[in-house]
Image (cartoon, rainbow, N blue to C red; front, side, top):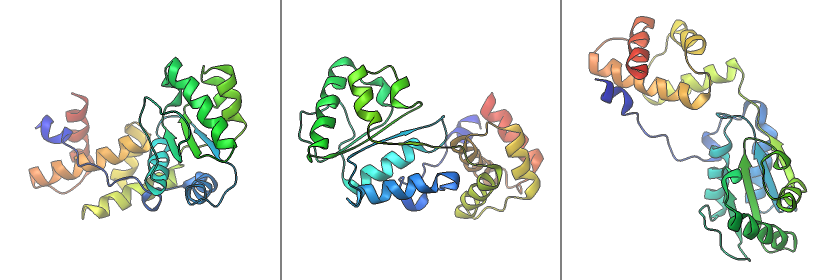
Length: 214
């Protein structure tokens, strides 16, 4: 049964339309415009704690722009480049990214990077960190409880699942509070409810959490 619980449905491919911006609405709007070529600044960096949507937004931007997202990095010029967790680049790719950023500033491409911290605190080459910091830098903030509740209900409705208020409140107070984990728990709850032919309730949710944590 635990394997059934962990066999969680994959999310829909990330895009701007299925991202819940909450307090990050400005960053979301800028990224969408940037991918459409409507913003002059060629270099953007997203940072924030885990679960704030950095990877989702970067994937949405890359999808809209048709960007390269893999390493090792090519030599300039590159039209569109999206790099998640830029702090993990090796020394060679940091040198290449520095060249790509310089080329982008000369009109040859657009670049989006992300990481848990602003560029100056990522442990990158100082010259690369400086170049990234010269672009637009957005900090993504965690969703508040009201936004998380809305996201949980949207996810549940996509499964045809009714989430009683006491279940969502229990989720927010007894589970890891990052949104990906909460949404994955709703997916697991749906699977478990169907397999046991039982309605969603707090006792059922407790069983799911025990299965996940086992």
